[in-house]
Length: 231
Ligand SMILES: *[C@@H]1O[C@H](CO)[C@@H](O)[C@H](O)[C@H]1NC(C)=O
Image (tube, rainbow, N blue to C red):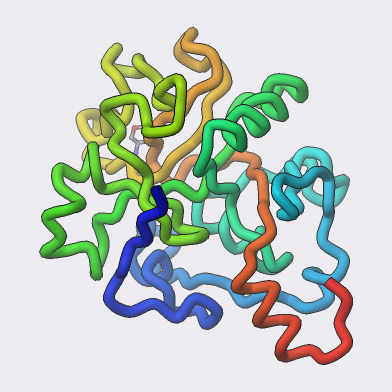
């Protein structure tokens, strides 16, 4: 089942997509935008492993990025310069692959492309309510994430952790209760709550390593605008 979020206006390749104007407008970083791909970086992007023809890499494995930790939007932008985006975990098979990468490399946590649709363009959408259950999507592809409160169709387990800061199933928007910072982004945490490797909603300003994944739209755009480029 593949459901795509039809957000009113999106110009994927240009820097005017939904996440741009509305994400994490923290006091220190106002008016942030999505980055454009950089053709030379796309052509030489790290290809550490792949799934169904899409190359991926973990930032901690790339010497120039090894110690880099970024907030969620900077994570998207880091990936986008390589014609990639944050990894989306659409299926159990792909999720298992990413969980294995996290386990084998002892990575404490990563950002994924998951985000809650609570910005301009997400209003008047009964299908996204309640947001904590039906409002999540993969920003890289705009594909909806299945209901958070049950095992997704086609899966044998619920990837969302059944515990967290409040000892309740995720997503729990826990930081909101502490200081009104919403947990709008989807992170895979490695046993932070003694819960194994699992999905958590996390406030987007936290800085983490990321896994980047080839983005077909950005690759097509760079191929079309740079004749002869090898991607
Ligand atoms: C909110 O609380 C978290 C966890 O204690 C903290 O890390 C963060 O800096 C706080 N944010 C604000 C805006 O006070």
